[in-house]
Length: 413
Image (cartoon, rainbow, N blue to C red; front, top):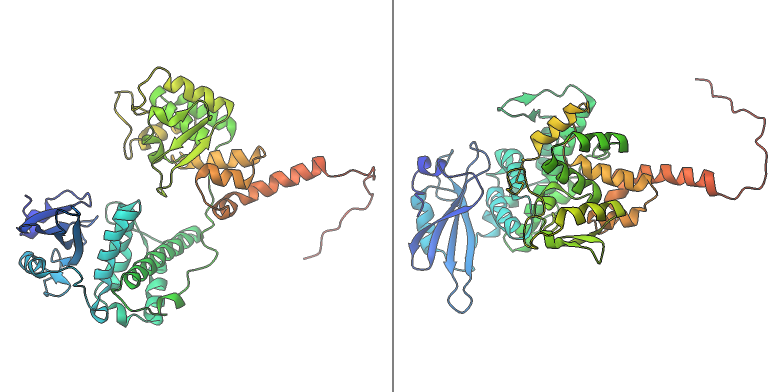
């Protein structure tokens, strides 16, 4: 059983977002989950066994830990106070809506998020960095549109954090655009956690946060993609094990994490498709393959056990988180792709080449796992427009009209 009783012992726990439980009584435990960053406070939880009929547990957030701020017995608790609250807690006993703080709402949302969504670590880091420092101690009932609007605007003006604890100055227009994008992401997450508190009966509905609107026209980032020739050079320069991962991405448009989770049996020769069972949206999808994609996956899976991981490193171990970063950088440097692309840009490459060769936005959206075409239209629609222009020039009706002799004059400035 982990020692949760002191700040020092909790500081030694791995920062993997797992809840560590300590038994309080039979069927009852107090839990602690640390924050993604050492400068942020962890959270206390209670767990209560529902009984042998269901075999399940009730679980509820108790408050923040006193990792950095003194305990106040209300929303910031030391170990003794957390144990006392856990000992007294009963199902249905929740914080009164008028007393709920943003910190408590955030902890409740992250607990729900862990059960229903992916990328918990990224969301936790956003909450810790952008929401809790300024708004954590405020009561949800006291939030007003001016307060939230000021927080949103200040977030957009703050320098971006960089590794090592420093901050990057806002020197270019692209830096300012990126900070507004980050501010919008913070606002979106704040609204999500407040709305979750309302849905679960922890807070009263309010129009305050719906009145605060995101910055418009700032999320149109330029997506890099490789031309076919650069893609061939990249594949030729990559070591065999990593080349398989890159080529799998190019044939499917899948994310790195989705590729890492593939098993040999996920390839179907009969349906000419790959099944991605573990996806970002949690919804499985089939990606249909070209002739080259079929040939690649047939060779990759031939004679192998169905439950084996499809893509393996040179040492025979599965690819894991961040394992792709270094080989991608080295392969790009070897063939002069400067700056090096990141792995996710292979997804952009797949989408871009798919459209430029005549594929439709509807079919691309399904291949990428989007339920509508909104995202592909937003990021790749201009490529489809370019292809339509070329197709119109080739295939629109021709009546034998000769090109006129008039030349268009440029307007004076």
